[in-house]
Length: 159
Image 1 (tube, rainbow, N blue to C red):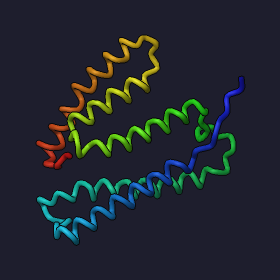
Image 2: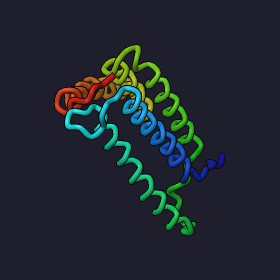
Image 3: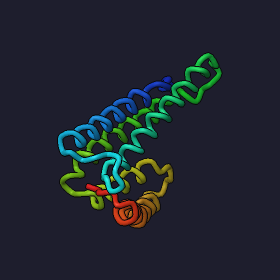
Image 4: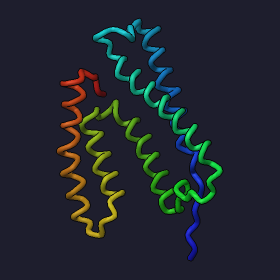
């Protein structure tokens, strides 16, 4: 059976443009409706602004680089097999479910569950118990560390 491949070079850009637009929309909504100032020392919006602005800059640089190298037809790195495309689609659906569940179960619980499932599914190991154990251990260690760094050190409010 022949494996089919698809060119997905510009698909991430469409998704990232949508994310950046939503990030800036939410920032401006909070600034004008909630009267939260962006450029203050204790502003809770500054971290989101820096991330959104950084994404925008890197998006533009990446698009310019891909357009410059688009005539190189030997570049196979933009092609993906159908099986991997299914994994990507499942991951995006999982992200949407994760975002929808965040307000209900909050950051720690939702992120641990999401990370366990994703690391289990993306791990190519054949031993199921080994995959599950790795997923659980990495989630139980990483998620509280991320929570501590962002909430306690960076003073970023997490859902």
